[in-house]
Length: 356
Image (cartoon, rainbow, N blue to C red; front, side, top):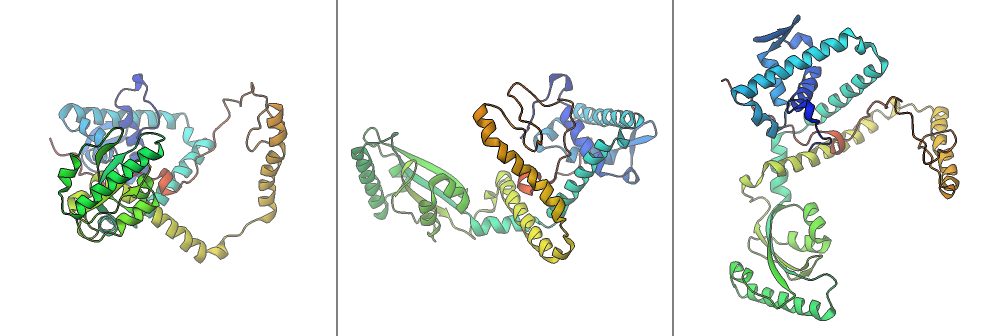
């Protein structure tokens, strides 16, 4: 999902340019071999580099570069990036300390992400899908906002009737068509494939426990009070016996993000244990750094009472609301983030651009 809007003047090729920059920075000059399509100065733009740029795009963006005009646009994007890159070198921006810090941070982040990505194989995701998910659906008696005790009691009685009918082998599909007295509404909720965490977020811990206690297809829970109303949930497919086609791209990306977080935390625990002796804190400098936070905290309450604001990390006087920071002050180089914050949702890569 995009974080910023693309300006009109940049055109649809801006996303391609950014992807090319990321891929280009990851490839050394020694790798620029293959079929040359264009030369920009002494730098060749090869077919292989075009393929890499294509693979760096999101799936939705790839579609616009498949036909002949799209391929031409992608190639032009690479030429444009190379021209901009060479101009940056002419201006010696690569020698700017702030740029060097940004590049080093990007390199560090990329290597950490690659370390984690290489610890995961597709079989891990499929195994997690089969082990932790169920396919389920629910009959939901929806309640109005702030229902009276009488309405809630009527909804509970209707839910008990549905439960009794299911016990008597009444078809699920027939019960879905049942009309309830106003203001109650009976709906079918097709949850699809859910794990414990996903279901708990939707219906709460009690309902999650009841659903995952079911062991056979077509088993169902007793009526449970949830935020929606009263739910009866039925299992359609059980763990270990799920339809492989149920592992959709969105679900795979969800599992990948969780697996990355799991691998990340595993590495952190292992490395901090094995290399604890190599971590040598400078207590004096750390205390000086942390004391800045104490100073801010000490001023925070008086500043709030006076109607002023204190810039976090500042050691000077509190700023008045009308004051702003120097807009030309350089931003700090980005730091590392955990996979759930900064890593891409998926490392699945399509095949290179097919030959025309």
